[in-house]
Image 1 (cartoon, one colour):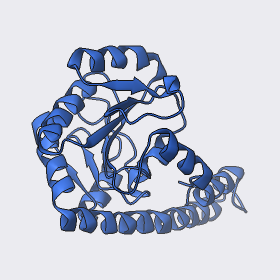
Image 2: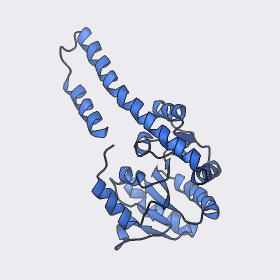
Image 3: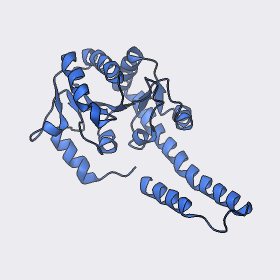
Image 4: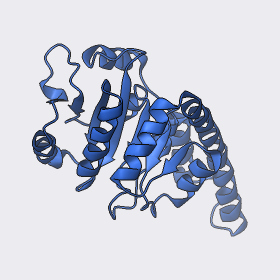
Length: 232
């Protein structure tokens, strides 16, 4: 998951993020999850008044609906596309696409959506690649292997609901040793997955060659190898 340092710099300036900023990002959220995230964030605000939330809905067609949810919560917020110059609002609604990976690199803790409803989760590696402790809900059936890797490495926590999310967030913002431990463990997850794909490609290639299907790796294997190289 490569990021452009120039893009990171622009984001930091636009969102007025410094090394001392306390940023909680909720990425790839789906319907009903924003309510849970906002509830957890309000709990966090009571304990850590200068914390900020970056909310990144998964589907562009929900941007307006999510804006109404934030507005109804009473929280002061801004939409990313409407920022003129810079903004330090406590809540930023990212109403554009293609920015999530870069934003993970500016965050202190990440929640990955699609996991508190029945969507089945999203890829946790995007957050782990940024060295960010990752939180996710109980429904991760689309990413069981990645979830297992994250939990076994100690790079994140599985939470049950908004209340659990709020308390885990507080732990990770207040306990610096715990945060450092999970951040360091994120590198183990990425390293393990970087090693896994080349081995998988080798096994597939050998199996297909042995069966007589091919005599050399097909285009799909080359494409997968290229994707792995780009994402490493």
